[in-house]
Image (tube, rainbow, N blue to C red; front, side):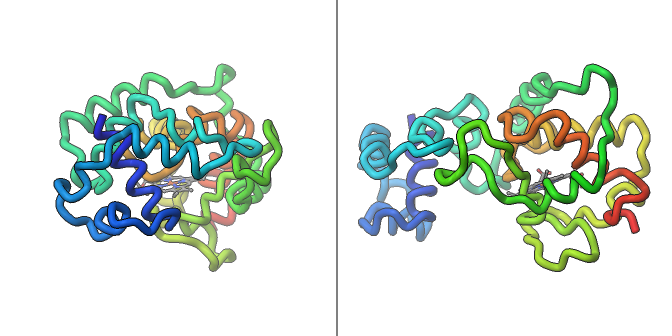
Length: 219
Ligand code: HEC
């Protein structure tokens, strides 16, 4: 079970929770044999003793990985995921995408903008079962008006204007937001629908932000 081990080392090192030799070697990306003595059980114990579940942020949420997370954790460098594994992950995730039963994919872009701006949700200081934001701006440019955005993800400015709103584009965009891994295995983008971060209605609103010709994304 190298999986959890690698994931935990990377996340602990990046959180700066421990300053020990193992974390330092992991942070420097030194050869695997230097960290091989740390077992999965050590890491689990370390996480369990250092974290306390509070509100929606639980120790189980850190430790319990699904099959895709386990597979992806073997490749902290996402560009090194082997093609056969990527295809397998994408096919499995695509099967889990739930499209709206009423085929109503597009909501209100004004609500979508609020959701894209909102970075709250699922943190220890948030309410359990509260309404989450999506924090799209943390990783994407979306509108011209908002100049504070991250660039881990590609710019989505003019998304609808450039791609149109054919059935294929609409379905792809919904699937991408529902489960980013369905189209790009081991993506750094959250699986908003699959993980229950956003509701179906919230996804409709974010869809409108990207695809409605009246949305500031497309001006
Ligand atoms: C933690 C960072 C992160 C967040 C938050 C995030 N994304 Fe992404 N997104 C990415 C990355 C990285 C990619 C490119 C890799 C990939 O395709 O998964 C991407 C790709 C996309 C794409 C595909 C773009 C294309 O060219 O086809 C869409 C659409 C998208 N994101 C929409 C959104 C929306 C809408 C939100 C908010 C609901 C969001 N993203 C939140 C990181 C993020």
